[in-house]
Image (cartoon, rainbow, N blue to C red; front, top):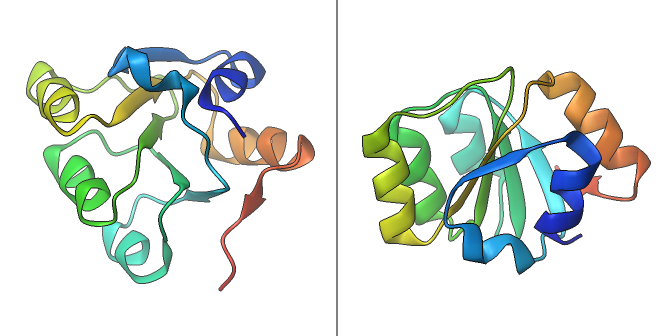
Length: 115
């Protein structure tokens, strides 16, 4: 599913690496525990989280993730945005909850990761 389409579905705004909205993701994973992200997530996954610190960007970089969606209206600080720009990771933000976002994306065909 293309990030641009995801943005429309959940009314998200891009706050970093806007040119990357053409990326496609195959799965999504929602978590605020980066240890779970490291344990279960694979490439081509959209990370959905409420954490906005630099560790989220570093985790995404380690897994070669192309996009992170911040929920509950969270907006990362400028240091996190700059790091995402440097690493070419798309950062999006939405006012919706992690639960609602996950449901909408699943309803429109984006599956979760296989455990």
